[in-house]
Image (cartoon, rainbow over all chains, first blue to last red; front, side, top):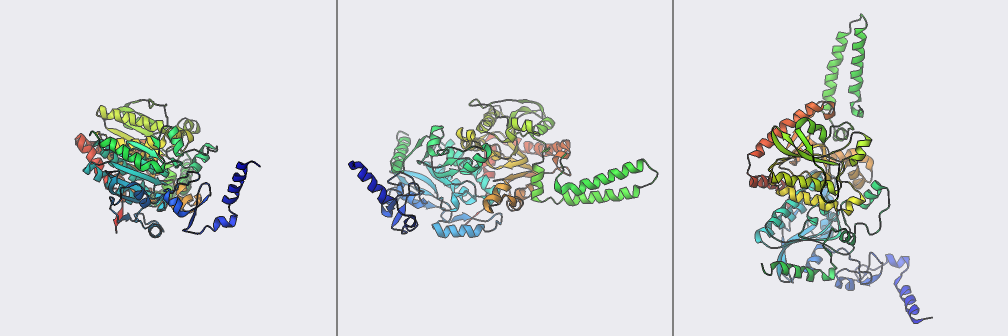
Length: 284
Length: 317
């Protein structure tokens, strides 16, 4: 038996756990890749910013982990931390669900906004968190984004947003749809004032969020493998009565179809944004 | 004309009256008292039914196969309408009609979703569900309107932007997002009127206006009642309940502050008397345009921003 086969087999044997073991991954200590199912020490995957060391899969990041990964230490100040949803339609169970996600995530809403420095460049920032109501956009999120953009405009600093959202928040009905108009309006005012807006679409960015502020940065970036699109895959398959290819609506698909400027690996995110920010302030 | 389930008592009674009338004409028996009685009952029944439409009834009205479309109103409200085609990038999308016309001697740009009323026309119009090129055509014409200082009037009537493969490949999201952003900044008045179904982002894609009005039996929603029901309660059959919970009717949206005016419909819905309906739209449209005409280009944009800036309901804890 050649030597390489010997190693190949051993690896296979070691990395495929039994069905029981798969469920029994101890919380906290070990973590399994959502994509390739490889099991790692949690420490290891945290250190690699939740990118699987084996297959490169980008796991969703919480808002605060994202902030930590991008901002120069100790520079970030949060805005509107207490701003949260009301229940304008008296939608059944809505408040309970919000409360539950508040406890689960420690956030008051599915977004954190604020200001800080990335590689020495002061920016206004917003990052959505898909752990909170799937990052769906209601009035509170729309308001926080609009305020962050207006602050950026007043201070004449770039605005960067990391999106992660299943779309509009149904429980707020048309008010949630109108947040698309409100945020896009704020983007218009901001971009017209000569300031830089960067949108980074992370997994998933769909529906009303992809059809508003996420798609209208001066630059639109995406993380590898992120699901980005307007309509849901199931709806499209039902409408056109055919199966869609696996890579449909991925970041790479959007790149190929001219919809994003660049797909940026998470490990390169901070330096790429830093460089880009410098290119827009140098010589101004 | 297809009869909706909840209208059946009215239609039955009307038929009975008709029968009695033709019977009296051909015989000596005088049934006038009886007929008068029934006509009084009919008036009351119409008041009861049409005056108390449930959200789901309005959904049915908005989807009525004979509900007037954009072009029905264009014919009646404007003069010399000339339609223009194409987005100059990919193609022509007949799910949106767009052109210029006179409105009371003033040149205006008119844009609207266009459904068909039969299968053949619906296929041509893609059931009024636009692809990106539809939104890009609309934007091209809106920019033109700005250049030549024409007010923009849009008619909203779509189940939604088309959820298809080609639409995604050509950037449905970007097309809609860009329209929202660009409509925000246009220095000419924009008046939007929801005439049928206002389906989510596909409706909003031509719907960022200074004034947004809505016909009494139109609907405007972030997701269809069926879609909401299947997500919320895993059962599309709960659509009626979703229609009530989601507050998608003109009276609800007026209360929420999302629309400016509710435009009344003739008894039984717009399809029963299109001329009257056009007249009712005309009154509101004229008032809107007159109000907006008084504003400077900067104030038009500022007024629009103030409107959208305050939409939303949230709290601080």
